[in-house]
Amino acid sequence: MATATAFYATGKVTAVKDGKVIFAPTGTNYELELVSPKYAGPTGKPVKAIIRVKARKVWTVPSGGNFITPIFGPPKIIQGRVRSLDARTLVIQAGTAITVDLPDEDIVFDLANGAISEGVMVNVTAFAGGTFELV
Image 1 (cartoon, one colour):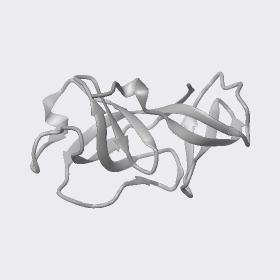
Image 2 (cartoon, rainbow, N blue to C red; image 1 turned 180 degrees about the horizontal axis):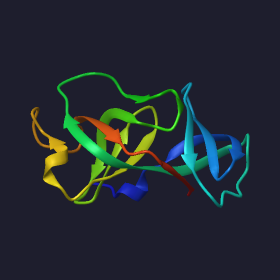
Image 3 (tube, rainbow, N blue to C red; image 1 turned 90 degrees about the horizontal axis):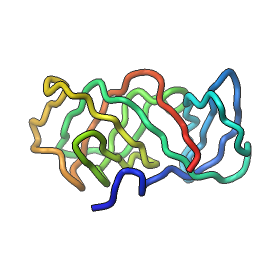
Image 4 (tube, one colour; image 1 turned 30 degrees about the horizontal axis):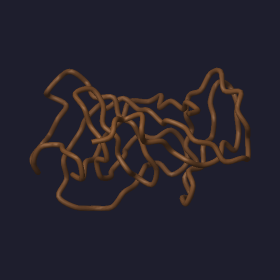
């Protein structure tokens, strides 16, 4: 199994303002607002990055599609298949690769549809403040 840092998002930074970037992942209509206080990379050109969010709640779900909501703004709900996981993080393919920092408290997990493992569909509600880091 690959580590979380082996998966990254590809796309373009379309704007930089007030310590945040607007990131448009390749092949999507998303415009994700992400914290990146010292961003000095290109705008309007293809980049590779790690998008990171902190989980508030994690569910295993029986079916559904890969998505990020809202389409425009900071990511709040992310659903997709697990590409990689370890004790502290998991990477979800949800239109693009999103790295999720997992909390220590067991109460945030709702595993009604089985344990989290590679290939399982999960739904994550994230705290505000998803971050963007160039690879």
